[in-house]
Length: 92
Image: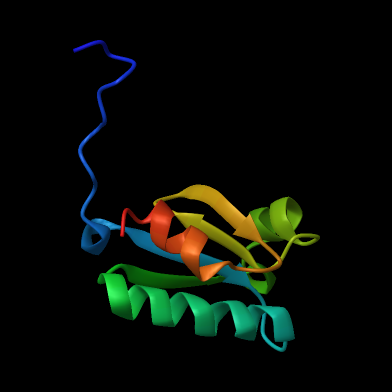
């Protein structure tokens, strides 16, 4: 079969980590966390939170975009989290 038509094997969502980068008191961060928690509960993925007020590099990189969502270390979304898009990114 041509490499163009081969599909890579689906990843097990339970092996993925979703990272939420935000800060305390951020309403959009709270909304994003609710969405991420629901999707992680459905898929078995784990959730990790990082606070830009505690990390100078994260603050410099993301302060205009929070909340920022990473899937397995790669930027996935910012400001608003679409649950269906997150599920697809997790392979669910």
